[in-house]
Image (cartoon, rainbow, N blue to C red; front, side):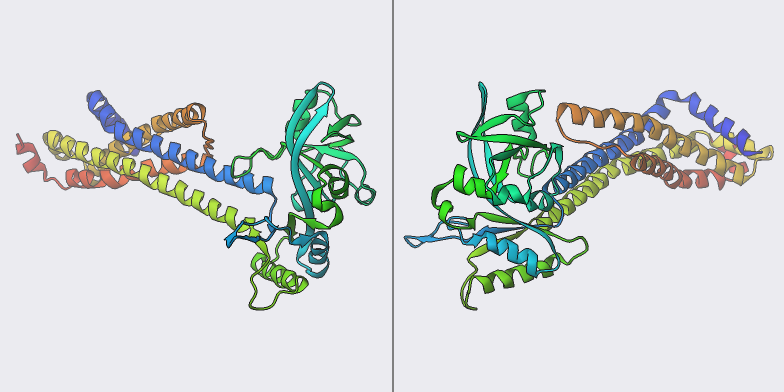
Amino acid sequence: MNFLDTLKIALAALRVNKLRSALTMLGIIIGVGAVITMVAVGAGAQARVEDQIKSLGSNLIIVLSGNIMSGGARMGSGSQQTITEDDAYALQREIPSIQAAAPQLRGSGQIVFGNSNWSTQIYGVTPEYLEAREWSVASGRPLEQAQVDGAAKVVLLGQTVARTLFGDADPIGESVRVRRVPHTVIGVLERKGQSMIGQDQDDVVLIPISTARKRVLGGIQVKSRNVQSISVRVRDGADMAATEQEMRDLMRQRHKLQPAQEDDFFIRNLSEVLAAQEASSRILALLLAAVASVSLMVGGIGIMNIMLVSVTERTREIGLRMAVGARSRDILTQFLVEAVTLALIGGIVGIALGAVASFAVGYFAGWRTEMSVSAVLLAFGFAGAVGVFFGFYPARKAAQLLPIEALRHE
């Protein structure tokens, strides 16, 4: 008996008990659907973290000002401006692994164009800021060093600010008031999206740091070169931990700190934070897939149970087939094909269910989901493996029946 004849007999046997076959497949359907859905949710979470890493800028280290003591209480990082523009230039000049170091001042204020206005974050930066943050200009041109040297009244708009003030109109060349100081719009930044804490990174305007210091933000910053933070981009392939230590050593040297003194600045390696978050997302995805795989195992046990019942019910049929010449191998193949067919049909229906469930989770829960071809093939292949694994024992039991005893079975 060839394989095609065996397949026809197996399918005919499954059609005899359609309801039982459908209920047997239900476990596999739910298992495959659950695996695909959970993998899609986990992949979506991981992709979201990767997008955050890209939006923040790769290999990014932030240097923040230190704290100050008031009445015996620490006021927190940034309460005293202890870092300067010169620190940023020294970092970039003296540490070869640093690609760009960008000092920055920040504040908030009203941006006005015609009858429209918007309250946003104002950043005073240097041309290196866009390189450090891997932020390009969607239209117009970026800041130039000459504009920083001359404290030019020019501004780059984030996407949110540009859309709010200008709608679909082109803002390049228009004049806006930044804290009542007229500035010419020279460019619009590419979209960055939300940060890992949910902040809109596009709700910002960038102006030359000298303009921010002298004309816009003012205050005690006018007479000093102090800044609130320095964004540092490390070259690709460089050791982030070693670079961080070099930065700390250089900053302590420049600030003339004794060995027993604490740092008067803070260094935050954001790449490590995001890498940890990415690893957590990856573990979450694997955990969800593992939990969902339990459903497949339960479905496989269901197949084994039904196939054992089927062997008991069809014992006389098995004896009759053996009596007319069927070999043990033919009986084994028949029952194994039945089990694998149940698993594969359940896998196909489960894939469709998983696709619908993934879409529903993304649509109703607002979560990002990503359904990959590899996850579908893995779930389908696992379903087939479950059919073989849990179907082999009943098939082997049927193949080992003795023809005479099987014919005597009531």
